[in-house]
Length: 387
Ligand code: ADP
Ligand code: MG
Image (cartoon, rainbow, N blue to C red):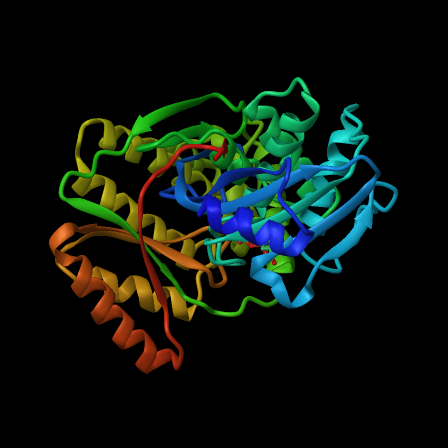
């Protein structure tokens, strides 16, 4: 891949003298969705799928961008003088946002760059291609300018830029999972404190399989923001009767005792998910540590039910992928992953059942939905690197 992207860089920008190649992963969250802004735990891992980049520092303040995923847009030119939070014309708002965010944090980017990207993660499918681009850009800027930032800082800067420049109200999970990725490990992260632990994912005789629904997502941001405000409303009401800072502070028993304090039944369901999903995530990591993959899978499937019925962030297409997966005896667990309303499912599938899984679910999906799903048998990889 390194040669392919360096050659492409030379084709697009004239030559590749002084250019360097980089990679940042995508991520999948194994369990713990919509807990990251509720002070709960998440359990994502970096993938060997991700975003490749070639970058070269310039002597002037020009920014020249090209993405092989958006080749019809050609080279997009801008400059360090044209960093405008809220702009959203095209994909370059992601790398530009990160350059801007470094400046906001007191690390001025003083020279422009030529940047070429190629990603093999599906865009807009909940595997965090946007966070992958952000962390990749931050990693390149650190390499170019020697900024004194850790990988964890790169995650925080990426989130800051997505929040403030791209106006997407995301939590910290995606950027953290990508910047801190570790081969064959998932990251058990407490989003309230950012304390974390690497847990080995040893799925002897099984694989992590991602199914992408390819459903076009509309109005996702508004639904996401609605879920956030419903959770916040529920928290405010609970805080009148119990001393907590976040929904992640509650166990299920305490929640049940106090849930009537939440007047609105929809907000109550949202809070129930935030509380139960956090507890499930804690249990799932424990199960994995005990090598109890069966229990881990069962908790993943329970997570889907909670996201479908209580948080209502699934949709017909992802419900179908999961329901078909559950029918397969070689599937240990299956759930929607990511923000929801489309996107991907993640399943733990026994090696012997993987081919049948793809074939059978693919066939039913095409028949019922009218377009194909894509399947990725994934490996858990490291964080960003120089190639
Ligand atoms: P997700 O993060 O779930 O993949 P988002 O909608 O948050 O979905 O981010 C997708 C956007 O990120 C793309 O529309 C594009 O603007 C940007 N992006 C991701 N990967 C690339 C890439 N390889 N090249 C250019 N832009 C990319
Ligand atoms: Mg994203």
